[in-house]
Length: 105
Picture 1 (spheres, rainbow, N blue to C red):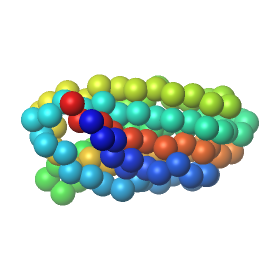
Picture 2 (cartoon, rainbow, N blue to C red):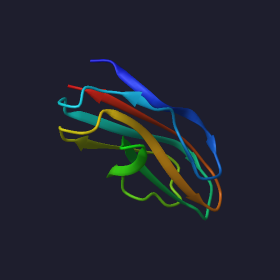
Picture 3 (tube, rainbow, N blue to C red):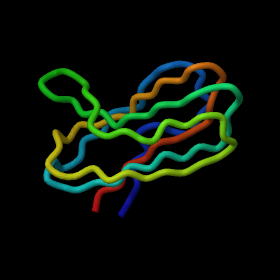
């Protein structure tokens, strides 16, 4: 299966969101967080958000990251879900270089 990179790898230093993408609502998904660099001290929170009735809301969350050099995590997203998803992130202090991708099964 192909990966849909909803947040391309880039240096991020503030709160933001990635691109939205549409997935079949009845399809289970797996989301991936790939961290390639960070500075200290800092924290990174990343959520997979869904667009429901015109409002973005958290659907699944990755484990909060502290000051680590590199890392990888994957989380399952069970069906059903709304279908339109994006990554939302919050950074406190410092910066991170990371990407988020979603794959359907």
